[in-house]
Image (cartoon, rainbow, N blue to C red):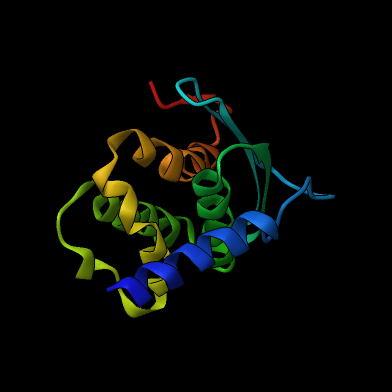
Length: 149
């Protein structure tokens, strides 16, 4: 179990140090901002939808390692998905970090299991899900800001 925790910690630290898809894209047609007032995490998610497919997703912001790592992993998983698939991934991840069964995630979502430790700390669940809630709001297209409170 210790080796698994170390691997998970390394995945989180890697995504925090070198977040994937970080920055403001040249093109986007959906955006949403998220804020976690309890810890100060702030994220903006930019989507480029073509039809109902996410052709690009990027994010910017500042926050704890959990928040940045989760956003980074999310962007890698969402590119190329339909809106429905992206929302299904959001629901699977949300259920995973708020539920009891670690084995619920599909094999292709293995990297998200690195965030399983947040379940023991409800305040950290908000850090892990902030970018995901922002992505879902961007898909809604209403430009509404998201807060974890």
